[in-house]
Length: 491
Image (cartoon, rainbow, N blue to C red; front, top):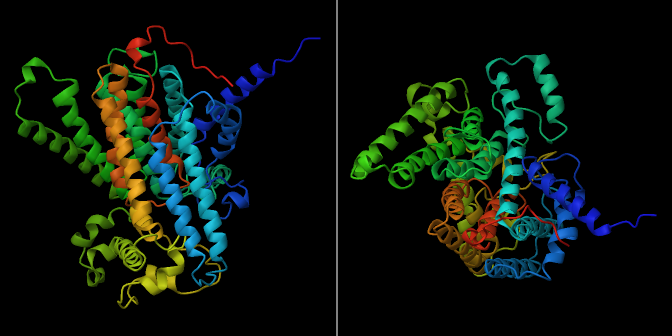
């Protein structure tokens, strides 16, 4: 009888989990999710299932052989600060809000933080060679390719809302998301269009643009200058427009501007253009951005939600009685942020505790009449079926409110460490590292935008991107690896 080689079986299972981990990243509101892991929340990443397998079979055993990168030090300090602020929060006399107790809220937020750290931990420790990193990137492209395909299927609904077509597509959407489809915007495999847009901008565009700029492809196929990344980039931009996400389209315009400047100034600078003044490059980049915005305007005019950005100025209606930011539904975000600052003023050192923003929201609101702000009234008025608590809608606003100076300083130090990794890759001489450097730089620019639109630790986007950057910065110089071996899985 042949003896079972458990090491080979474990390696194959881990390999499959590795593939599934990156393919499943676009699904972030999976319906079949354990209640104790956040099954009652909006963020439910499907990637948690292969993540657990990877942690058990691959990542934890590797800790015996490999030291953790120094980027973990400020991240561990942040975790400690969050724990201390949360422990001190138990000394406050807080009452349940909308049926949710402070203890359950704190436990849930500690779990979500643990999930986020696990995403970063796994992505960082997963790669031992540059081929491993390319392997992960290819399967990330595959997962996002499926999301783009599903987003493309939803585009016809934007132009013609056929009840039968909507019913069919919405049925399949219900298998991967807790929310039904939008009939006027595409949401991919996510909870809502904004999530899908940020996913495209954060998980996909930096690597695609970095590949185009550096000429480094993760695939062997190439037709002249056309690569798989080129095709994915055009596809991603086309689908992104139909999310009608204001944040996503602003990021797209910014990346178009910065990408053009970098392409003319650094990567593809030809001798005849060597003395082209920077002013001309900026004008050319601005023309590209204007062309992108013109396309967005033409398509966006078909969507009532998105076209509010300019209809306030072009249509003389009673809506002019409200401010512009009220009309485009942004002013309440300023209220959330100002409330977070008031919490910080009251509890500057440790904050109010992880997840406790909602419990202090009513008493920390700025002293203004809110009868005109429907969103604010809805948040402070009890009602049947309202079991979701308000959040700051801004990562840094949440940090300063819930973890105070210590937590915010530790997390900022972690971001500085990630920036250091990006700069190391940027100034490295090899093409492989150069590709990761420019991609990391673009990813951090995207993070600078999306930080104002999300505050969840459970969303994997941030952790995956930072994990890939950290992993690339800590791999050996590829110039010394003349014959890279296939991605290995050792236990």
